[in-house]
Length: 235
Image (cartoon, helix red, strand yellow):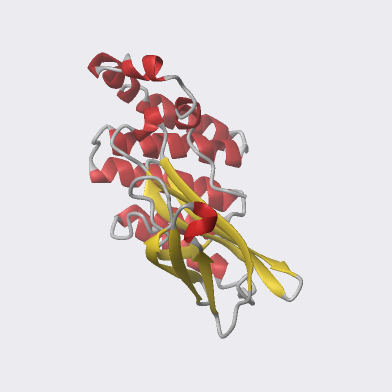
């Protein structure tokens, strides 16, 4: 399952250009004033025990905190709000991903110590199957999903890049999917020019809690979307 997009972002990506062209400074200012409201709504859902709903609302708090240029401390608080809700929901590895966005924040350190105690009680992952995230910004995560497919593996990549107004216009995107062998923790995705009007190779290297991607060539993704970097395990 791919990482969810913030609601406005998901809708904005489908809006017509005339509608998007009407966004101006007063609109942005008004939206930035709503961040405190996201915090209150998230807290209400959290206190009522609806932790996944709370995580989604806190994710919006984090996304808009980033966009509106709030302080690092305020943005880190939003990340920690998401993490705490995910911890309550039992989504420990996803909580860890959010805490790692601000690892030097005092709240992150405190919550990470608590989280590591719970993770130590979990059985370690065995094999490459799972879901891996890399942060694209504004509450959006690029994702690699790996599922057993006979004697090989179905590997799906969904990548995003958030431009400056991405919360309104939507992200730039790119994706690939293929059934591949994984040998000695490594796989290779090859895309031919004649098939997709582009040609690239993506090297995929697995470790216990992450997968590293490296691309050569042009995969034909959206602007600035790259199948590259370290993706951490979240499932």
